Length: 332
Ligand SMILES: Nc1nc2c(ncn2[C@@H]2O[C@H](COP(=O)(O)OP(=O)(O)O)[C@@H](O)[C@H]2O)c(=O)[nH]1
Ligand SMILES: [Mg+2]
Image 1 (spheres, rainbow, N blue to C red):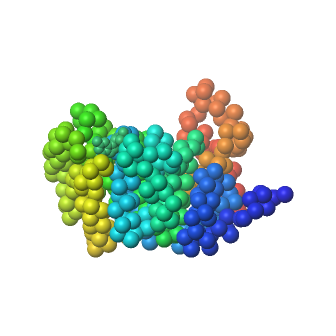
Image 2: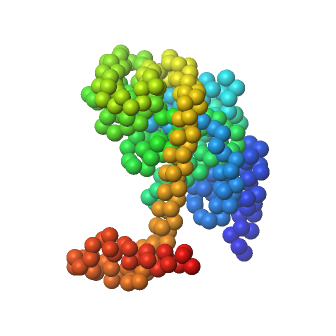
Image 3: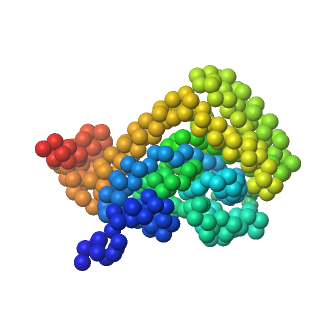
């Protein structure tokens, strides 16, 4: 029995219902993307052609900064405005699915069961690069299914997570009061990738201090890098508890999208994202080709490792020898 018959419905057969916005088909295709495997590729090719309409918004910040709670509030507002919202959470520390966020105040079932809001938590997989790829493929699925915007939550640490955010059209960096003396975004190295800054939990008395600190820091860095002054970097104070600032955040996200469309920045970002995804996909192909259990190369892997350990050849040279046969193979 082939893998396809075992799956009963092939991934390709899921494409039409996904494009029609059928929740079960979307969920099934996403699960297949997450677990990997070649069977889903044909479907993803089809999906990719239909995607590219949604506004992809990355939301990042350290764990505990209030991203998930804010996203829930955002989703409720966007939903009330008649928009279909897709959310992908790449955050193993505070899973979106199941339980409640923000104590018992915002129950996720306020949103779940509503077909106009699709929320998915991506499992962090062991394979390097796989998570970023799977997340963006999942984003394509929601995009093609008519969700707009698609919000992607990641903890702003680790290369994968920062890269995912860089594959968004608009990036929101969340800083929370009381999580340390400095602005956490600086520590995480994501301050400079923000299109919109959020100071969360502004119902707390120490939030003002964080807003002031952040603004001070921004005047310094923006003055230093006067390259793209056209977009005035906003700082929005929000509270998922009181709902303060959430409307303003929606406005700023929409304003940034309009700015990108007006200035050709969108095309630029789309190209940057395409380039990044191209390189990611190529990396993954190469990695798959040289799985550890394989003996690859004109010289065997073990021999190359021996030679490197003995300091006879440089890793760069060994790597070339390792991939040489594959490169010859593709040139044929
Ligand atoms: N006071 C207050 N607490 C918040 C707010 N938003 C989130 N929190 C709390 O901060 C903690 C982390 O929230 P969460 O959304 O899971 O953060 P994440 O890790 O960035 O997704 C939880 O205990 C929340 O209850 C807020 O607006 N005000
Ligand atoms: Mg979270």
